[in-house]
Length: 548
Image (tube, rainbow, N blue to C red; front, side, top):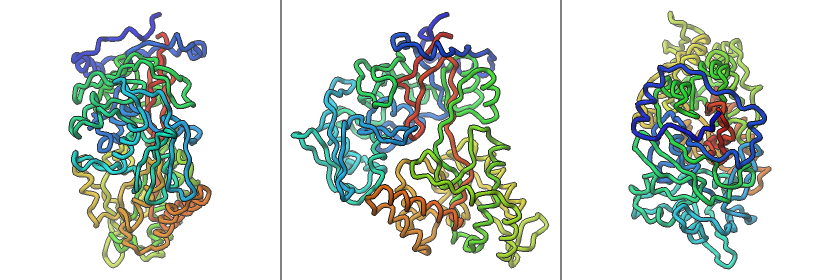
């Protein structure tokens, strides 16, 4: 048997191989077993890894493009951050910051910077460089057209103290989960050489000079990006099993947008891993010996725009929408046991999650009774409830950001029709979607949670912020709760308020959770050590390949 270090050469011909691969049916490699999984680090080194993604990467300028899934999977392996948020423990670990303190006001965060870290160009990741990176995130660069990071709260100042080798971020307002936010991959550090470039030049991955375990060596727009192992890497987060250099020689990121082609390429051995597979394919992949890795990302559901339709102003109608969804049925009919019904406004990958599933149990009888009581007691010839001659019709755009959105929405449409509600599904393309959903006549808005910072709840639902529910200040209690979670400096009190927010959004029928979303990764059986950060982006530093 031979190790997986012998790979097909990376070239333009590779894309042609991928396109042909969908028609090839071959068996996958055998499982390595316990003896393989325990191989020591010396035996793990080597191999050119091919990762097939479902989307084409966009700009690598971190403040503007670093959060897109397809881009951030690459960014995550090029840059290091102040801290690391452990997906399993939900604990914050030191990384570039070896320690930190938060003052009693909750506004001053001081980080002692680790010595000896370097970028792939040999320059030092030192105190001044950290200050420059944080300043760009906090304030942007107007001259270059680079906006401040949307992940940062308002900041008064970023200062460095050479005497203590520490940097202090002074916030203009409290943000209880700011420390966790600093673990986000698009808040990673880049070298001074990268910072000195224009916004346009920063958008190329080849100019993204980080301190991470890999370095970008090839970029063929829309076709392939290659990362190679960075020599001398020695500062991984403490929870990483591999504390040194990456095991893989290289990673080729290949965007393959067609699901069947991407899966066919993996099955034929032309890829080592892929992101996203249709739920209907999971059982066959399991049986064939592939590794299927599910990582929770957040909760999907509908924000209810109370003022878009007179019917939605009635809490009985909103509660009928809440109990009229058979969430377990959605999972059973469309998905697999790697997916779960939603149990709250956010998923349990958040440390402040509270289980509200008892309020989300499917009850068609209760839904019908609520609608009858609200005056929607007659039905037209199509079985849709009417009141004063108007049908109970709620338009919503099918989410363009979720692969399973169309069949999922169609199932919910059928469930709502059973209780006499006409869920009118509208479609548009990726580029037009952000504008289309601003239409204030839409009764429902597809929403999801995949964030570390609970400020996003305030930003989304607060009437002084995005006001996605279009409440326009009509519910002061909700606004008070959303603001209160930002004002406290006590973590226990913050979590209590966040629990109250989750309960209130569900009790009022402002948010209709449906399913907990997952990112699904599939790897060959000889792939080991793939882990993910707290937002489900892959960590390739510890990946190694056993014998076929």
